[in-house]
Length: 338
Ligand SMILES: [Zn+2]
Image (cartoon, rainbow, N blue to C red; front, side):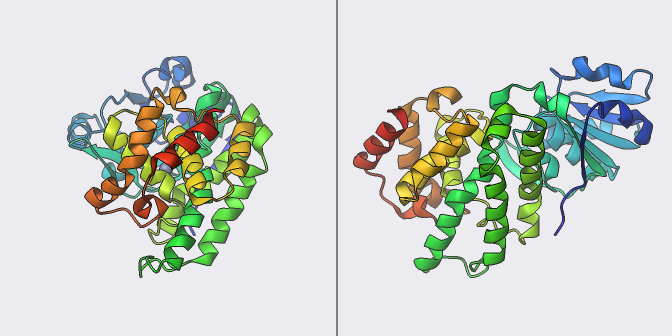
């Protein structure tokens, strides 16, 4: 089982020019770097503030860069993924400094990039170290940090779907029920469910808890032998379906959290329990928090079955074989808005 090395602390960024082999390629979020650039004053580095995730743009950039000996990723999601991609393609040592807890990308082997607009996960790069700086994380907006629980809370609905697929005889032969992975994931889920107020506050302990959970989750898809079932279920089908219809960029964890509520309700899987936990954490899961309407949500739910058939690469869950009735839509909307 491979988990990335991580250090928690303060004033970590200023140490990097001393430990990374110069010249350093710093892949940083454009809006954040000016605030933190002084940590690299006098250092021998090249700054790259990416504005495209398209593989052709990344390849062109790599060929035009002056030579460098190490890569540092500094940002929320995009800079982390691109630093990973460049370090993989150029085979240079990588140091990652996430600036929020919105995604598990700093802890995952593969880089999320786009090819002709289509999201793809490619490559394999293990960083020397992931540095989690409390002050940097705490300076990000709280709603962004709290949204990071989405990709952990989805184990709640994902595990129900896994057992459901087994009961229905529809589980893939390559992914028989792997109880060891389900219980390992459940332990990680529980660590987050037991730290709701710390994560709500984004306290040091809240950061350690959620980042440790994301550290497990980021590497899990690799570690399970690419079996997504212990870590993803119907709530992600909802996310993909909604994204397919609306063509909007989302804060991933927010939509996934909404998906967990919608799907746990459909599953009859004690939805109130997981809603109470999300409310304690303060996850912004209402459609208006993500700039969409209930009409969009209802359309996304209705489209799940067709999306599953069209995409051809998603696994069987309650989202793929249940007729989405107006009665369910009215009930779940009423439950989430009353
Ligand atoms: Zn996800």
